[in-house]
Length: 324
Image 1 (cartoon, helix red, strand yellow):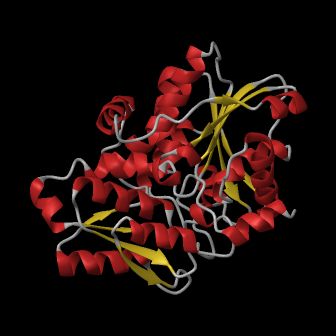
Image 2 (cartoon, one colour):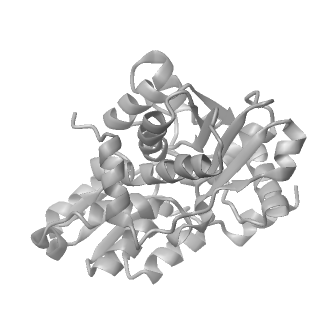
């Protein structure tokens, strides 16, 4: 496998400069006091398209040659990668087709269409998004843009971690822990390359929805493990059936562990983010915060950064969180 390195994350940072937002690094004062720790958040919900996914998508699409750009791209996603690819394609003048689950949040479906993408829906329980995308690619000649298992996607997502560590250094903070949500592992894989290079003693933790802990089991067994089902959690943004070889290898090498949280804990974290940070965070993006809030990891006396990876949530789901 040709795996990205820290140098590739640095290169990605140059590639997306001027297009992606440099999101802030903010101290969570109330939570820090509550847990006797020094806790910071990296709100990627403030990123272009409302999620970190723009970083990797733009890095990938901007590397296409002229012939590939003419042929267009096809991607598959429950919503945030979809929007990242669609927005990047619009900026670069590339046609895009996005394969999305029928049960994707309405906001994500509509936003993807608003960026000019052609959206094709599928049944995530009974159909393969990869097969649908491959068929479109064969018929139209489109370039397939995976949601996480890609050299440039991984290195692009890693720029979030690169920014966070540099921002921590500027604030005089040496991080003990760095935590992100994890689905297929593109975000945490890329971030881990940056974090380990700049702050090798920082422990990196991923957080998954309970019942969809394929990454945790894969790291523990040393083999790629599968989830028994593709849907069934409110955390739609991070529901993947299994990690892929590239992300599995990077995560196995760099992660200190993977935690899990329930849907109710994710909803409670959404409410907390709104009340205390004044931020709208979607369920899957709130799981790392949920793990800290609900004591899944001991943070007392430690300095940590929590990535809030996206904010694309339907009104109904957000209302459900606020009513908890």
